[in-house]
Every structure is written in C-alpha cells, then in structure tokens.
Image (cartoon, rainbow, N blue to C red):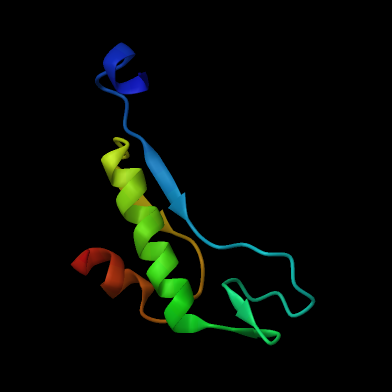
Length: 74
C-alpha cells in the first residue's frame, strides 16, 4: 500500500534475529549456543518474505556468518 500511495518511496527492511541473551549474540539458540546454520536459514526466509512484500533493499544487521551470501543466493 505504501508503494502504491508513494511510488517514489524506497523501502529498506532489516533482516535480523535479535533475541535478548546474556551473551549478546543474535540467532536461534540451541543448548545456549547460537545455531548458525539454522539462523542463516531463517534469515534467508525472512529476506525473501520482505522482498516479496515489496521491500527495495534487504539490510541484514546481525552478525551471523554466511548470511549475506545465503540471502544473495536466495
């Protein structure tokens, strides 16, 4: 609806998994450790959903290894 009302508007969508943890790392936790592979999979799905919804720029803001390459590939 935003794009229809304001076609010149650029939309940027944040892609991140930001749980509140005592160690400060983002991502899906398994046994108190960040599951990097599982987190990358979900971040990729999130980026695709944002793109399908009309986001012009997908902007990952987390620190998960491999997420940019996975998002670009998807």
